[in-house]
Image 1 (tube, one colour):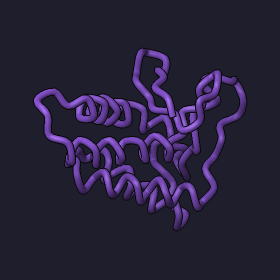
Image 2 (image 1 turned 180 degrees about the vertical axis):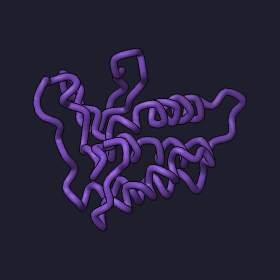
Image 3 (image 1 turned 45 degrees about the horizontal axis):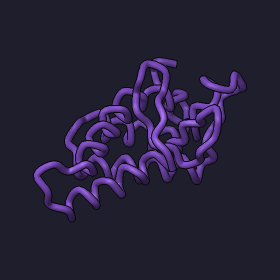
Image 4 (image 1 turned 60 degrees about the vertical axis):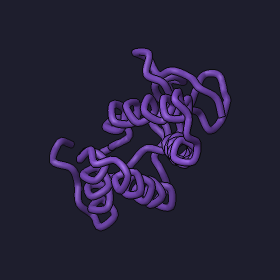
Length: 132
């Protein structure tokens, strides 16, 4: 993948290097997990993997609400860059998003990760968000 920026100069690690960028959620989270593993296994005074991981986690926390439809998750944010309809995640990808968020919540105690995962789990049994 490659590093790109969401409007507002928010860093994003792309799964698919396309122009315009698609901002695929599961691919981005997989890159964060890889960066986490790398930063934990490499000890150096100035760890680039740690900097990339921290920047990516900050981006995820900022952009995560954009992936929430109120009844499921979006696969990507292509509708911001290609001006097409939002790309709803199939249930298998929605489940992947939940699993990934729970994994990240186990290594980062920011409540946005666990609360989003819980809300998205509830979508799978028919619950809807109160904000929609």
